[in-house]
Image 1: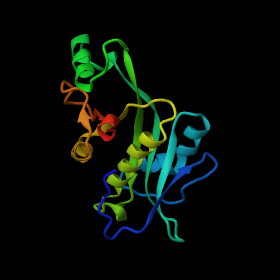
Image 2: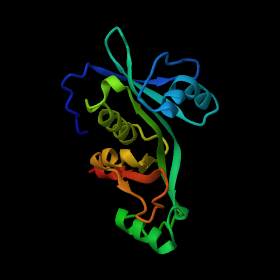
Image 3: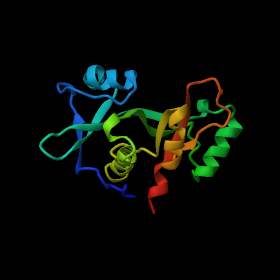
Length: 188
C-alpha cells in the first residue's frame, strides 16, 4: 500500500461505526455528507444497506477526522452504452472469455467526508488506501473494484488516487461521474 505523507497528521485509526453509535460533531463543508454521518449512518447499518467507518485520531481525543460509507455494488453491462463498450472494458481488465459474466463484483464508496480542519493533509488519500488494503487483504466475498459516483469537483482527487472514469460519455449536466478503481492493480 502506498503510504500517505503524514506530516502534521496525528496517528490514525479506523473504526467501524456501529448502528448504536453516533458521531457527535462533524463538519466537512457539505450539508449532505454531514447529515449522513451525524444522523443516518446508524440507520443504514441497522438496515444492512451500508457500513460506515471513521478515521480517527488515536490519541485520547479520538476526534473523527474523516469517514466513509460502503455498500455492495457491481460493474455491469447496463453501465455501458452498448455491449461493445462493455466487452472493451472486459478485455481491458483481462477477464477470461470462458466466463462471460454480465457483471463484476464491486464495493461502492457511497460517501467520503473529511473534516474542514483536516483538509489538505492527505487524510482522504489515507482513507482510500485503507479501503484498498482492506479489500485486498480481507476480501470475504470477492470484490474486484471500488466504485464511486464522484462529485465533479472531486474527480481530480479520485483520479490522483488511481480511479478511472467508467464511461467517457457521461451526461455533462449530471452532478456526478461514475469512476472505478481496479483492485487487481495492487495485486501481483
